[in-house]
Length: 267
Image (cartoon, rainbow, N blue to C red; front, top):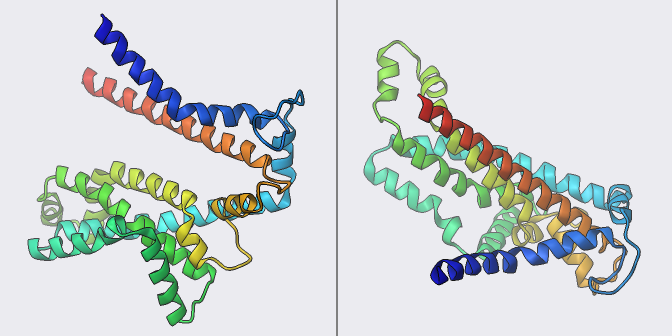
């Protein structure tokens, strides 16, 4: 009994340690105070109104979302095709390509950022949207491969050849046989790519144009001024919205997974 109580207490303590700061941030997103902790009775939706009426903040959010989705779509396409290509390659080639693909994962992000900036400058891209997009694709591409590869390994390797023997063209076999089999891995890789792109600061800082801002660079610049920027309190509302969207996505994902499990059990 005591052991069980200690175990549950440890879990709840860990959860409180992880999520208490986020909950505090959410609470103070309804308080228009410059510094969290200062007492005030001004509880309202003023920060949310400021967030949606600030042209600079809305432009920053739009920039971040567009960049994340464009980079993630490119990474998902390239990562899926790359994973399929490696899966059907010879063992020596597959191992070599797999090692090269994982370099951005294990490499320090600052090294990736500097090298990407230097290469883009060498090819006359400079610090443009193209170099920024290339940097985010390099960051997210390996994680798509890592999510698609396990699904390929779970699949029968002879399905592709069987489809060809039954009269399908290589393109038809790819889109009607292979892609449906690895679709959950593709979707997971896309979501991870979006998350990484939304959150990235280092690569973005080294490759973005000077007039372009994402949420991460905007937050850093705002707090670099000592938190005295007028938009700093509104960032609490933005953080709360992002956290709420993530929670909703997790609930929906778990609900769908539970539904699929129950449906499989009934069969």
